[in-house]
Length: 526
Ligand SMILES: *[C@@H]1O[C@H](CO)[C@@H](O)[C@H](O)[C@H]1NC(C)=O
Ligand SMILES: *[C@@H]1O[C@H](CO)[C@@H](O)[C@H](O)[C@H]1NC(C)=O
Ligand SMILES: *[C@@H]1O[C@H](CO)[C@@H](O)[C@H](O)[C@H]1NC(C)=O
Ligand SMILES: *[C@@H]1O[C@H](CO)[C@@H](O)[C@H](O)[C@H]1NC(C)=O
Ligand SMILES: *[C@@H]1O[C@H](CO)[C@@H](O)[C@H](O)[C@H]1NC(C)=O
Image (cartoon, rainbow, N blue to C red; front, side, top):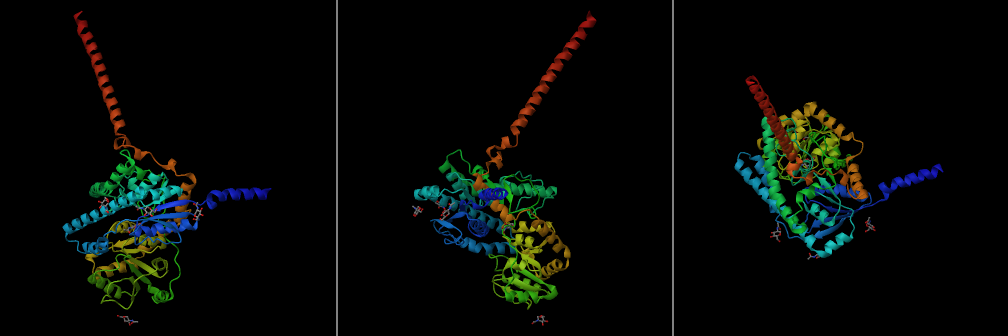
């Protein structure tokens, strides 16, 4: 009796959590964003969900054949990739020779233009899907449970609306800036706008800079990037549908972020933090690398990687960095693909690829020299290794400025880098224990959670599948005009009422006074 009741309970418990498998349509963003999406897809696949990924025919990163997902390939014309191939070199040059601000502005404009083009291309790709009846029919017949999208580009938002499906975001950026700015109240007095490299404690001048940065980026993004999506909505959904409302109407926002990294700020019931979901415990190193690491003895190793895009530094900078490394007793593992620096010391090992996560998790690793890009910062937090930052582009300066503020990193300007500056910074990171202690503290905080970030993300995706969305977690704010949202109409009405009643009281009093005076005036005469 007891036994069968237990079995029933176990069965009931397993139905919603274990057995159910969903059918998920994924609209990813190509390039480095895909790395993160793939982690999520692999995990969902291992839980028994069916995954279908939409990719463009010109995609270099999203492979058509995969054991984890099926593909729908949309044929879009080739894209001029020269700009992005050169982008890295140019942004490095701009960063290195920061003297000319005119050059910087021109470069900024160029980047904006290129990004607008990508957004337009995504719209073109989405309209290809919308207008291909066979494809639309097969999408409708596939009976998807939900759409998983990265809202840095808007295709997934449009497709989810068209198919009438619940929408879950894997998000850090939207066209309205950092994810939170699109959905949660963000008082500019203590929420720093990414790009300004500020913190949550701002002086008056910094607050002015924060507000200006906000309006400039908002204008740029809504105008340049939002425009093709707005036009798209007009064309396919009618004049009443606004792209940004569709965006804000998403069911769950899986934020690639958490409060070990982010400054405390207001958030929303449908925002789920999964910062560090891509981090794994480290595995043993390959034999030769392990031997090299062990040869460092009590001094330990320094690892340096500026990411896959920035492997190639200008020769003079690489020489300065190598010269500084050569003066240290530590061993150095440096991911470097350019020509061999002439000043390279015999303690430095150049590699074209390294198992970054496994090295960060190694007990001998003392310092991580990094650019603050995808995964690097999160992995360093996960393993508790302090960072010496050399930011180059995008939100990297901002990423590292957050770490500097928490006392877990030092940030150097690559345009002012020479061997003595770099050596001094390295020595401080190595011999001042406070950086390591603070990073280890942050790491402990990050690990002290009831459920692992990746499991939390999967739970909420399955939650949306089980319940057909999460409308009860969405606020109504996005349906409102600016005036309603800020209660300007209510304030004006109340103010009006106050003024009118004040005026009436005044009239009444004047009338009464008049009577009294009048009466008084009459009395003596009698
Ligand atoms: C997942 O795909 C397999 C093979 O294509 C199919 O048999 C199964 O019914 C699908 N499951 C769902 C929930 O769509
Ligand atoms: C998008 O499509 C329009 C009309 O077909 C075309 O003029 C435009 O060049 C396309 N944009 C891109 C970036 O491919
Ligand atoms: C429409 O989509 C199907 C696949 O679903 C594809 O085979 C076909 O070529 C597409 N048609 C056009 C005009 O792009
Ligand atoms: C490495 O270089 C240092 C000084 O440049 C030298 O003293 C040392 O013997 C060298 N070690 C090896 C193994 O070559
Ligand atoms: C900045 O850090 C966040 C969180 O670690 C990461 O998602 C993002 O990719 C980083 N920025 C860049 C430009 O790599």
